[in-house]
Image 1: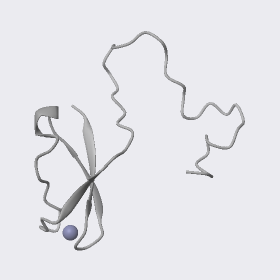
Image 2 (image 1 turned 60 degrees about the horizontal axis):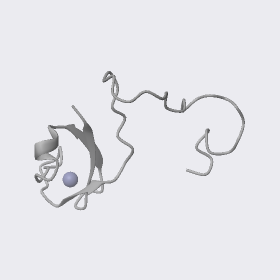
Image 3 (image 1 turned 90 degrees about the vertical axis):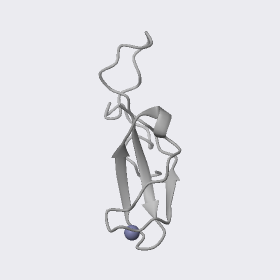
Length: 73
Ligand SMILES: [Zn+2]
């Protein structure tokens, strides 16, 4: 089940929810109970499903470069 990141515009907290794709656009409520939330576009890591053939690039390859360590986020 994919994860979705949300941010609460009331208390500025970020949280994530697991929900079916069919409910991806459904409103989410902040853990604090606020309803003014926005869905963040994040890289959804779908693990455990054998879809696709080519291996994705590992996040911690240590092969150098800047963008692996999050220094340029
Ligand atoms: Zn909140």
